[in-house]
Image (cartoon, rainbow, N blue to C red; front, side, top):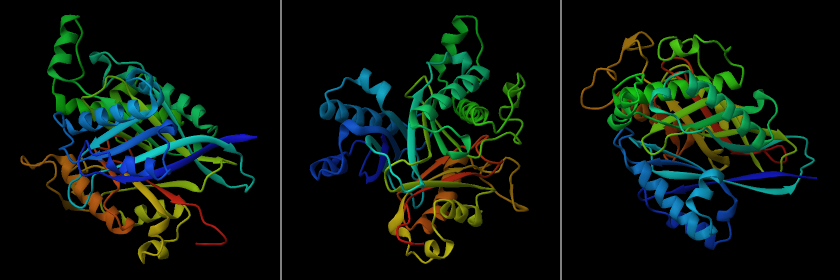
Length: 375
């Protein structure tokens, strides 16, 4: 009997078009481009509407995959999920996390190991972004990705990464010409609506919230509705939602395991540590640095509290006209998480609308599974 074996590679990047690290792994026989199913990248742009480092990185990776696999860009679009998240403020470092998958004999260790599945929604019309259609279609894609990963129980899902579209002036005008209106005419504001709908779609698929026509009205208003495992990042480079589901499956071959927790706010060190514990790492070995060799990567969301307060004290992230709130949040959470992980090449994404509680966010850790009683 065979099952999917998932391997994960964290590759430093000197720029959004730098794939020398990819080539080194291929030359060493450690990476087979034909087995790549997802790439999550952090680029050094501003993470905003005009962050073209995301598209630059995506195009560079697609061109590399075309040359290495012989597949066309169209074929790769349905096979490989590319999620590029801009913004490496503070201690964060540009890098890519590459997931490969291949059939291997099923394991008989009785433990659960990392599984990954991918899916895409249809392209959205501009007037559908930030509205119910995006929530429902995202939920359907999450279900497809779970099936692709071989995950049956929502409790086995520990992180769902989504890349979602945003509105531009051109897209808003196209809707108007059809007699339709968009949820907002502001491009930057549309990122929040798109991220929020995508997160609620995950919550709906995993039964974290109930369905209902009122869900659309809850977007960016009812912060009590959220997913504890969703991470969504908006970009100009696509019109659909790309979905990557990460979880654990019993009997899956491989030596990686994923766990998660939810940070209640940007300073929630204990929440961060619970994510490491969920992946089989003890707090002591994480904090003293002895477990760093087992940490494959960390994924987290960062969000300035919408009420302008953190633990009773005012923060200024929402009022800074020089630096956008998401950049503040990425730097704050990124510094905390990097200090614990012992590495700045971690995936911290800003804008956590309905991704964890208001002001907080999910955090997931992929680690090498313990062996021979190792803590």
